[in-house]
Amino acid sequence: MKIIVLLSLLTLFLSPAFAATAVKLACSLRKNVIVSSFNYGLTTMKWGKHFQVAAGSKKTHTDSGTPFRITSFRNGDDLVYFPGSDSYLFFYAGGTIPDRCSVLETFSYPVTPLNRYKKPLS
Image 1 (tube, rainbow, N blue to C red):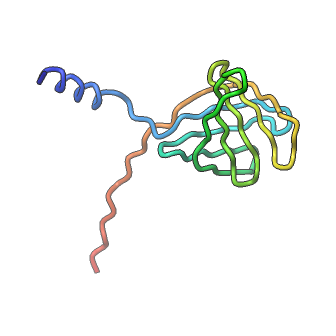
Image 2 (cartoon, one colour):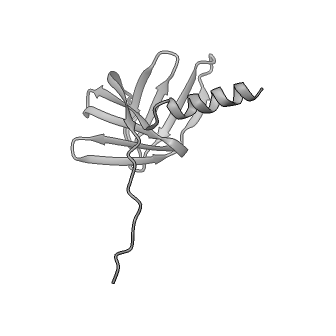
Image 3 (cartoon, rainbow, N blue to C red):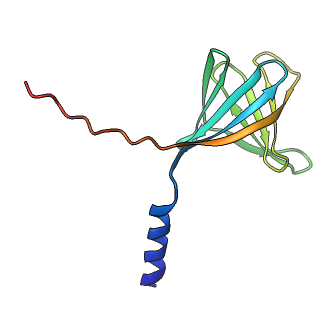
């Protein structure tokens, strides 16, 4: 039992740490969109000089049982992700026609260690 715990801890410390995962999408209306998913449900979306945030996502399924996730951004856009087919649709704020996006690239952001703050001596 001790050896299993030791190996688990060793694996944990040797595995690379990532701050977030991201996907770069090619969408017809916004061209290149980068969607980043961070721990604790934070999602960001960047295209051109625009930047939006979302908190959490809703997991649901179609009437036929196909699972998908909806992420609602603060500007009213909804990103729909189908994990089974790795496909994405955007429903832009106020619109009803989906913008089908294709995946250009997926990547991870590494954790950036920050120096501890030291109060300057007066």
